[in-house]
Amino acid sequence: MEHTPIKIAVIGGSGLYQMDTLAAVREVRMTTPYGDPSDALIIGELKGTPVVFLPRHGRGHIHLPSDVPYRANIYALKQLGVQHIISVSACGSLREHLAPGHIVIPNQLFDFTKNRARTFFEQGLIAHVSSADPFCGALSTTLADACREAGGTIHEGGAFITIEGPRFSTKAESHAFRAWGMDLIGMTTSPEAFLAREAGMCYAVMAHVTDYDVWHESEEPVTVDMVIERLHANLALAQRALTRLIPQLGHTEPACECTESLAQAILTARDCIPAAVCDKLRVIVGDAL
Image: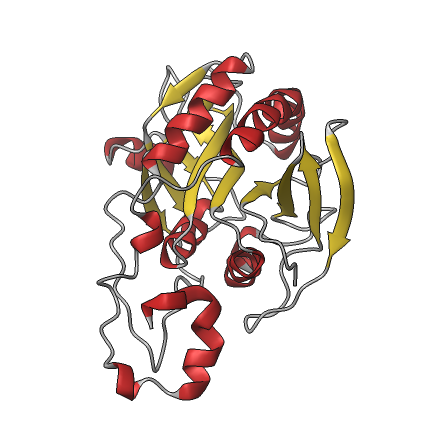
């Protein structure tokens, strides 16, 4: 484990960290009570600011959306001292004005997954964390500004629905999600955002629109080739935005309530929590116990 805390993490594709401005690059392999993270953690410095990159699906894209070790990923980042997580994610658009190539910084999240571990709090230690606003508002605003300065077409706000995958939606599902008021669709933001909140970390999403899902009658149905092509097209933009954002975050402390997420959330009486559970979750709960 690192002795000097690394306050900023980026979770996304394996190509994100391959930028000329990233210096002193090294790999760190970690293990957690929830198994190993998706891959080795790539640690480096952007303009002198320490940052850690984590390929969500592993290098070579080897983890299905349902099989990403979300808890191990967040646990490992927390153990390194991370306070800010920027998620870089591909998504489909459910609205005409959110066009392919645009970037959306969503402010709401709908969890429509079915087969994933969603919490650190299980038998022996129960906590009910507020998720009314699942993304950090302060970090989302700062992220949007950095993307705009990098030259992107940016939309702030919107409801992001996470489906189980790995298949894409049927037309009936896509139209239903639009009727529910959803704006974006993806496969990985849940439970990642909720776990980050449980761990008291600020979390925001740079959502790259790659397609119109399958509701748009004048567009081709979404394919893997389409997603990859448009993600690659936006990779340089994402790297420019991160190069602006990360040094800025390195000089600021979280100015929000994310770090206090557990202050009133733990329900289990302290003298009823097994010692083994305390040891397992001490990295996550910190001073809350």
